[in-house]
Image (cartoon, rainbow, N blue to C red; front, side, top):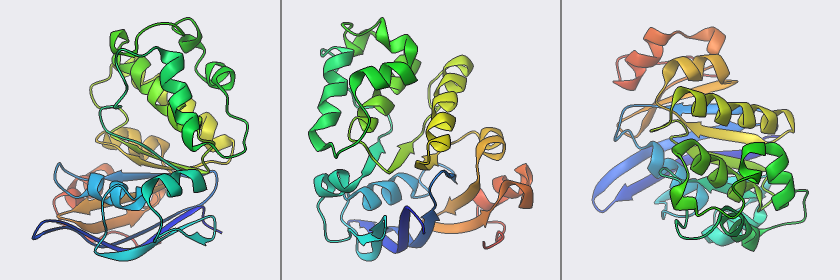
Length: 238
């Protein structure tokens, strides 16, 4: 059974339809990448699934439970987490305080501040540091840790590598691979097509609000992903 399943999601910004009937399914212990050019509708799709953006139509099912009618905070308490683009930390609060905020939607589970520090060892020495003084990679680790504090079963991450150094990106993906190995379902918006091909279990490409390609990495190529990002190809349906 899929951990996260979204079906025929439609969402708008005023009179502009941003997502046209997008569907996806992420199973436990799998990493799905959502690709596409700027303005393709990726962020709107994630925010609609999370309940932060009102959908025009569609359904969202989490661990077999229909959460479509739930507000965003109730979806979070059901086990769905969103790490937004730009991290959205509280810059004057310490690392520990930012992490503790994530526990406000916590379900019963293993994640504590100390467990976060085990997953991101470099954060332990920054415990009392203001989040706004951290590097981009350190802030991304805090943002992921804050999401984990809610003990989610699925995490959606918007633009994981945006603005990060190559070393920081590698560190973030090392942590995400560990979460996948723990059985978590991951839905990741990413601009780096090479990273997506190397890391994904499944790939989706969006263009102008529509899914134009759906494939496993061994079924597609860098050229096909790039073409689908501009609506020039129809991908393999899996």
